[in-house]
Image (cartoon, rainbow, N blue to C red; front, side, top):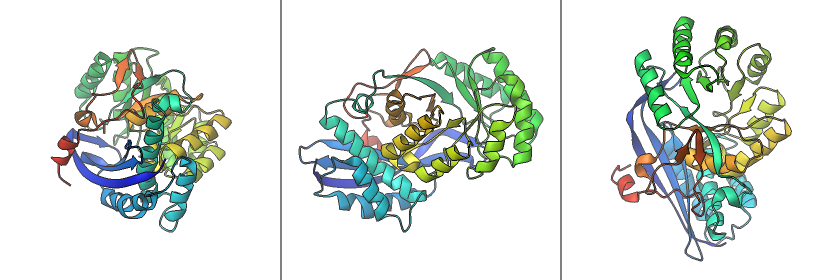
Length: 362
């Protein structure tokens, strides 16, 4: 598989409505960085990553200036070897951070291209047998008034979701409890409900809130602490409260090795778009399997659905608020009775409407 052309593009994408959480505040747009690779047979692979609105131009420059040109004329059939070479190429400024985002965009394009050459959907190319994956709707809704939060949940149910995640981290514990209680009453006992704090607390407060949330039968409490506080997360795992999910803000395989080694997550949550792509995500998935932990995801559901469909320790797929639905030629990922169905198209199956994206400008 020889690469004949490689290019990168950058877009600032407005969100349909502002969203908010406990750390990032109100968000009105996100940055999309795209990598397109064309091989000697004329096939194209598409990769992309995203940011919450800052740093995307640096990621774009790394893909355009440091990674894509190095692939020209090379045989990229051994994708894991290429991934290692990209890590080495950027190690001086990398080992996580923006470099992992840039590597992710290229790595995803390589896997898309390889599966397309094999004329298989990516989930089957990776060894999956069933395209169906349990999915939850991840609301970015901390500042929504309570009735609007409940209305959002009703709309989510109407759309076919059978699991929901809501934000916590309001100023007062009583506010979080009131909102979780209202959601539990709406959804009923046994309905899978997760909560996400987006790194809102120090350990003492996280323990206090975790204990207060215990009565609501939550699937998990997500990111209660700073992502690098492995010791604190490990202590929370041992508390008599909800299971702990974390990892979306870790940007290297090495960080996940420490997270799992500390016993700091019941549900490790790698995001392929921010930690080095499909290759890195699969390394973490295998590591989680060895630790007997189910793996879940963050963001880019159109890509992650393939990886979970090929994982023996798959948990829920997150349907993220930063979706690309407005720019997909084939429409959004199919949701059927609480499960996402990975497409049968060769590769990852994502086809973007370039005219709509170009109309946004940079």
